[in-house]
Length: 103
Image 1 (tube, helix red, strand yellow):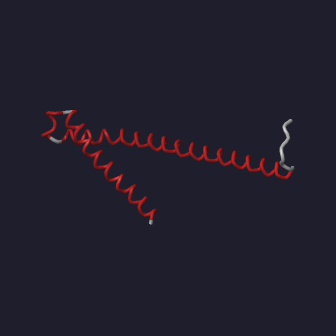
Image 2 (cartoon, rainbow, N blue to C red; image 1 turned 90 degrees about the horizontal axis):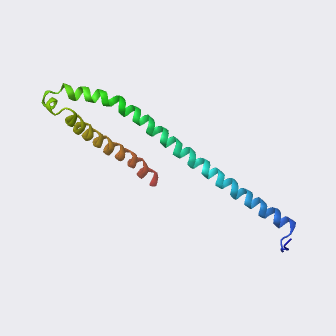
Image 3 (cartoon, rainbow, N blue to C red; image 1 turned 120 degrees about the horizontal axis):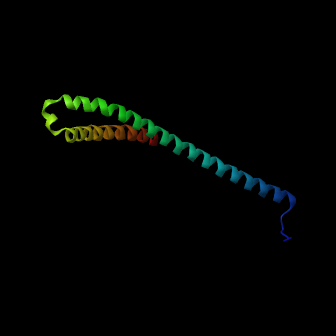
């Protein structure tokens, strides 16, 4: 056994420090796991919402007379425009919350 210059008290302190560090790392991994899992679940719910609205929007686009001749192409273009506007609005909303936190 290798000798060192630590007393029993110092060894106990080192052991406590190691245990605290291990507990902190485990806690950080758990928090990150929860964060990533909740993000994935929210994305899945978003996909479900998008799929349900797709039928509604497709039906509305089909009722517009001037776009019937282009069919799926016109639906895709209109959905893309609506989606881009939605992304811009959500991004602006999300960034406004982070700028308030910085103040």
